[in-house]
Image (tube, rainbow, N blue to C red; front, side, top):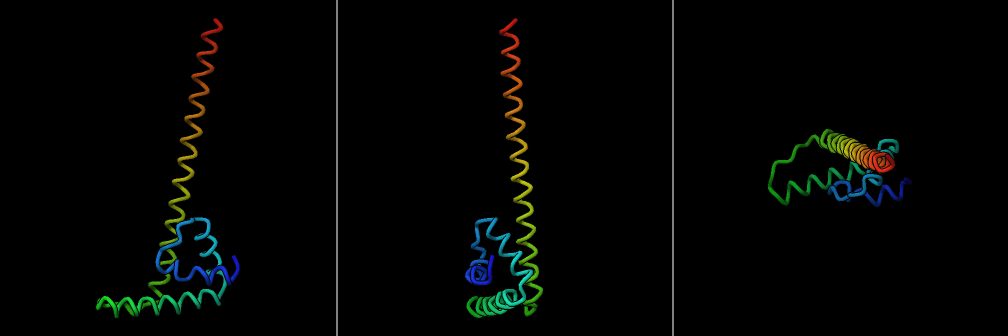
Length: 113
């Protein structure tokens, strides 16, 4: 992902609107390795949190850096969970296919005798 693509995703990331795990993974990799893009995200996150506090009259934590770090870590954790779930489903699919093959072979051998 390049800086222009990352910049286009800043608001979507802040608003949790990146649904594609691959895009989210590439975005997180990019902002964690590109100082300029991380700074852009940081500024937009601060503005977003400030506006949220003003419009909802809720107390907003002023630890914006900590809140952004937590948001990034939470997103990474959710990606890992999704990847584990995807791998488990693949393993279940493979197991089902192997069972079906074993049953077919058993019937075939039974039929031949």
